[in-house]
Length: 311
Ligand code: MEV
Image (cartoon, rainbow, N blue to C red):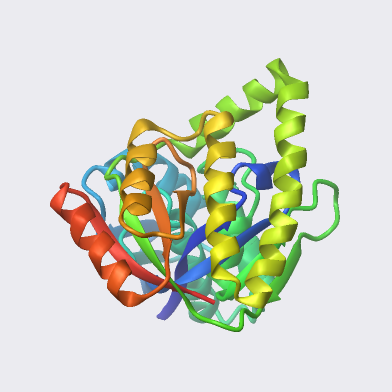
C-alpha cells in the first residue's frame, strides 16, 4: 500500500512558448491530487477516479489518462503480471483544463508507486516518471506541469531542447500575490492546441519568431519583477503575454471575455493560463477585497472561480 500527492499549477508566463525552449514561470497551487495504491491478488491494474472535476473533463481525458497510467507503470517497471494494482485518485484539486490536473495525477501516481514498492526515487526521478505519463496527453510536453507538480513553489522553467537537463530554478518573491482563477468550464485538447501552434510556426516562421523574441524579453522582465515583488509590472506583463497568446491563436472568445471581466473589475493583469481555448484564466489582484469582488462577479456570470496565492 502506498500514497502520493501531486500539486496543481498555474502558468504565470509562457504556456506554449515553453514548448520551444523559451523560459516560463509557473507556480504550484495549494490544491493537490492524491493517489492511493493497493496490491491485490491477480494481475493488471484498475482505477477509481474520485477527483472533483469540471463536468465532462474526465470523460474527454479518459483515454489519455489510461495511457498516462500505463506509461508510468511501464516506466517504473512495476510488475503487473503476478499482482493486481488498485489505484484510486482523490484530493481537493478540481480536475479542469489549465490547472495541471493531468500532471498532478501522474505525479501523485509516481509517488504512490514509489512508496508501495520502496523504489527510493528522489524528486528528479519522480518528475521523470510523471513526464512519461504526461507524454500520453500530447507527444511533446515541455515538462513544466509535472515539474511544478513535483517540486511545488514558484519556478523559472526552461525546457532543454537537446539531451541535457531542463532548467528548474526556484524563485523567491518578497511578497505573496493574490490571484483569481476563473474556470471557463471548457475542456481543451492540449494535443490539438499545441499541434495548431506548431503548424502556425511552420506556415509563418518569421511572424512567430518575432513574437517569440518579444516574449523572451517579457519573460526576463517578469522574472525581475517577481523577484522584486513589483505587482504592477507583473500585472502589465500578464496583459502583454495574453496578447501574444491571442496572436498565436490559443486564446478563445471565452478566455478573452474572462480576462475582460477581471480587468474591468480591478485586476492588475489577466491572461489565460495553460492550454487555452477554454480552460482557465488568471487575474492578479492587489488585495483580498478586489479578489473577492472579481470572484463574485465571475460567479454571477455563471462560471466558477477560485482564490489562489503565488510566491
Ligand atoms: C499546458 O499546461 C502547457 C503547454 O505549454 C503545454 C506544455 O508545456 O507541454 C500548453
